[in-house]
Length: 97
Image (tube, rainbow, N blue to C red):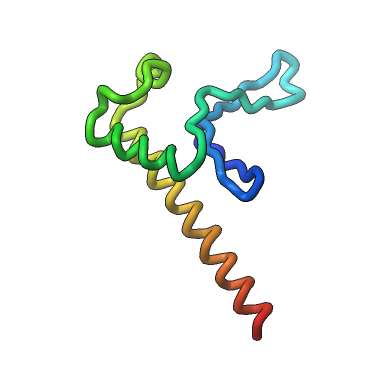
C-alpha cells in the first residue's frame, strides 16, 4: 500500500491505495483503501494519530496499521511536498534569470 498525492483545483489530496492485479494479469489496478482528504488537514490528523493511536480510524485499525505506518506516511508526504516546493523554486528562478 502507498500514499497517493493527487492535485485537484490547486490543492493536494491524499489517498491510501494498493495495487491489485486482475485475474488475467493484463492490467494492474490501483484500489482506493482510504481517503485522507486535503493534504494540510490530513497531515494534522496523522500527527494527532501519532500522539494518540486510539484516534486512528477503525478502517485503518482493521487493516493493522500502527504508529510506525503513520510516521512513514507523514515522512513520505513531507518529502514529496519538499520536492514539489523546491522544483517550483528552481523553475521560477530559471525563468526569471
